[in-house]
Image (cartoon, rainbow, N blue to C red):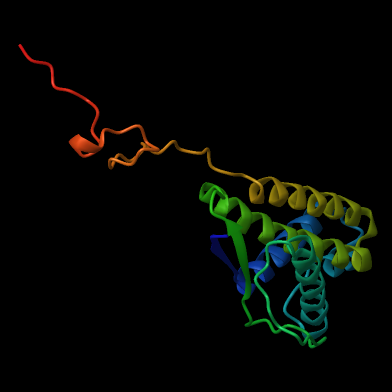
Length: 187
C-alpha cells in the first residue's frame, strides 16, 4: 500500500527556550515579596543541574510521544539506550502516513509535539520546584496529545476521477470509434 512520509523536526533550542521562558513567567507571576527563594527555584535556567533535569524530562516526554505515535513511526532500529539527550540534539519523528492524510495539519502536528514536550518537561520541573502548578502542566500535556491525535487522523476527501475511455468493453465505449461514444450535434 502506498504511503507518504511526514518528517517532523523539533529543535532542542526552541524546546529549552520555551521551558525556560514559561517557568520564568510563572515564577514571576507567583512573586509575593516574601518568597524570593521559591520563585528563583521555579525559574529553569542553563546551570548544569537545571539543564540536566530539563534534558532528562524532555527525553522522557519524547519517549512517551513516540509511544503515542508508534503506529505511524518509521523506525526499523533494533537497539536502544538510555543515554541522556544533549542540548544540541534536534529530535526527529518520521511518520508513515496514509496517502489520504491531510497535509494541512502537519504544522498542527509539529506544534502539538513541541507543546507536549514543553508541557511534560515543565510538569516534571514543577513537581520538584513548585508542586502547586505541576498538575496544570500535566493537563496541558494531556490536551496536547488530544490535539496530536486529532491532527494525525485527519484525512482528505476522496476525489472522483473521470473514467478513462479507450474502447474497452467494460467502459461502455464503442470500439469502432476509439471508445468515444459521444456524437457531435449537427446543424
